Length: 262
Ligand code: MLT
Image (cartoon, rainbow, N blue to C red):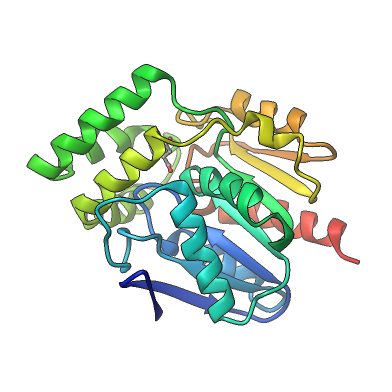
């Protein structure tokens, strides 16, 4: 693990492999380990840059953040590891929301886009309100109530118990201030539907067939909105496709990379 200080906070990241770079943006409230099974299988051909977002994993927390400031943290890390040209940006769920911000703020740095188990739409007013209430409660009580509610929605019923347990522990170890800041940032995020038509880079949309948080219909809308996009649906997987079925996830990513090569 390496760290880079950005805006007075130490941000943790791993860089694994050699080849064209892939920036990997995890979801909420997860960490860079989400990408370990993917990096392990493709490190002989690609260079995976895997940060912990501010306030999650081993990165220090800021009380306030936004999709834009997460995206700027990531460009600072890319600069630091020598990736100043276009890279593949791969985001899962909240990582996808950040990827859309990346498209708006740093489009020249995108070689290709992988949007996994995410959605382009902003929160409804009710959803945003409930996130803000959750953020306040997390700061008072800790995250257990939130993780207890989230956990059953993250995985397909077919996912091995050991995987569910591992991620439960990771989520419960996340700093409540990082969780609260992310909840507020997600509630405030803009709608990205109009961003889809402006995406010129090759794009792959991946979704677990059993994803109830960002369901297949949301992926279908992204697929239809991005010219020339590809869509892969992974059977027997929920919202956490890279760890639920790493082989299928890697197959989709490797095929996409082969198609866009050259
Ligand atoms: C995530 O997995 O990043 C979150 O569940 C996304 C969300 O709550 O909208």
